[in-house]
Image (cartoon, rainbow, N blue to C red):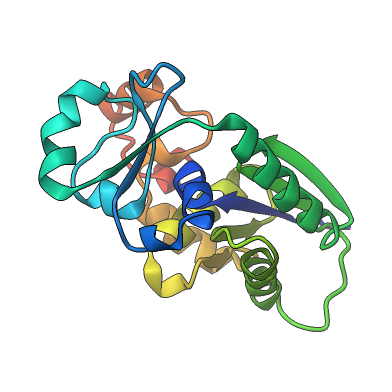
Amino acid sequence: MKPLFALVDCNNFYASCERLFDPSLKNKPIIVLSNNDGCVVARSQEAKALGIKMAVPAFQVADLVKKHNIKVYSSNYALYGDISSRVMATLETMAPELEVYSIDEAFLNLSGLQLKSSFEIYGRQIRQRIQKHIGVPVCVGIAPTKTLAKLANYAAKKYPATGGVVDLTDPERQKRLLELTPIDEVWGVGRKSAEKLKRLGIEKVLQLA
């Protein structure tokens, strides 16, 4: 039995949770701050596009917030935990085995799963069910290893043409993505490791592989 995994990751999770309870926030920039309102811990796609960086101190983006009327929220971990539980409960119904990796992402073990359709269609069914039952957008990466599933999910988020689902079961598609992807995006390769690899001339994931 060949191993196969899907990584399901909620998009901009804290910001998406806030939108669930205020539909008027749709398409508007949102940031969520840490417990003491000190730093940015989540950003909607619109806020990212305005140049808001992760973990930046709130006071450093005060001018941007005012200029673009960015909606600012304090972290509500009770809310986020409740929405996360609903997402994970839904995912449990769609795969033989679930491994919760963080509050907004989980691995599904698909090894041996027999489908009537393709795994890409299966990934779209996951997205549709989570959207319908909970209202949170997710992306899905499918691959033979967890590390590749992480990269597939990265591609699903980065490239809109994928429709939020990338299936890397095809070795040729794996190779094409690894040729394009910066070494920094490999699961477990931190900033210092990436800098060391780049000094060795290793810029893309395929070179590391």
